Image (cartoon, rainbow, N blue to C red; front, top):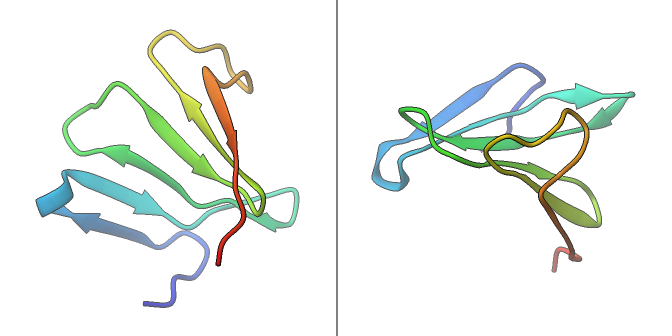
Length: 69
């Protein structure tokens, strides 16, 4: 699939909803659990940030470095 900014994809089998967004001119895809999950995942070019319950805005609960293959 190719997503454009503002597109949202739902995958009921994974109970996840992912959206294609932009932040500061860069792609900023993010996923959250359908039905009000506890965590939100934000994917960047070189890292994944996890925002858990009660996380402050712009302060991830966890952050992981990664490089797509």
